[in-house]
Image (cartoon, rainbow, N blue to C red; front, side, top):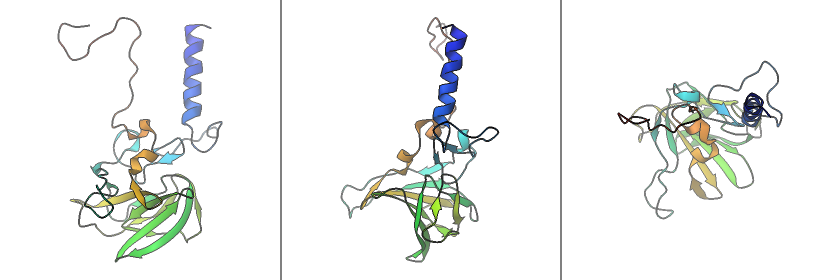
Length: 193
């Protein structure tokens, strides 16, 4: 196998592995939505690499179920912004909780994703695909310094980090870079490499 053939094979395998929706990749002429990869999507697309939104606050699990913490991730997004399904599932709740509009999508028997403050646009029982709009950002949350989407993930009754739903390449803030083969180079230090 020649070097060129090997790299074409690696490239083709990478493209097929990253394609959402089907094991053989997207239909010809289609591309995943901005902020989507491997059948997963950011709930709101942002200006960053691969559609990454600005993460205002990360997941901070509480020490005990009743203790302080941050049971989700806050993503910067303005009012009226479309919110989409992070993964395939079914809408199991869309309505107010303590006066805040919330949408809940069941991904499996154990996993549920929550979005707030989001006014749902789909009825309960609707099957959703990754990237499909499920509602619009509505209102503000007092714990966000700017308008935001609070995105949560529950396994049973335990909150987990919703960022774990996304493939690593989609979570990265910067695009991957290929380095030249050959002599190793130390970047950033004068007189090396």
